[in-house]
Image 1 (tube, rainbow, N blue to C red):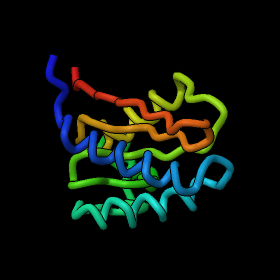
Image 2: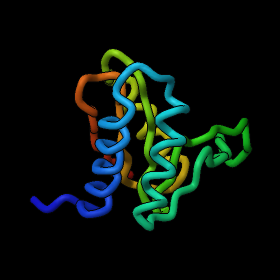
Image 3: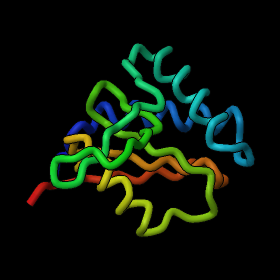
Image 4: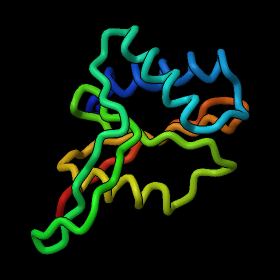
Length: 125
């Protein structure tokens, strides 16, 4: 099965590996975020950082949320520096995808010895 956006997600993961190789585990998420934005832009990718997202309920805005990164207006990237990625993290990213009208996301966890990367796909019902 061919993964959608395979080349783009591969580029994002590769940039994450570059950042992780250089910095290693142990820093806060914002350090990895800033380094990853630089690395992705150096690779010629369009990156929006801390994108503000309106959250609506029955057509009424009930608040705003910030996405860590949006790459090429296509992939939502959620950055973590945690012991384990859990089911709730997938559910949260799926909520972001739904609210932002996107279908593909990545969770990158920098707190491991090796960068942990997980794909998240949202399929509207």
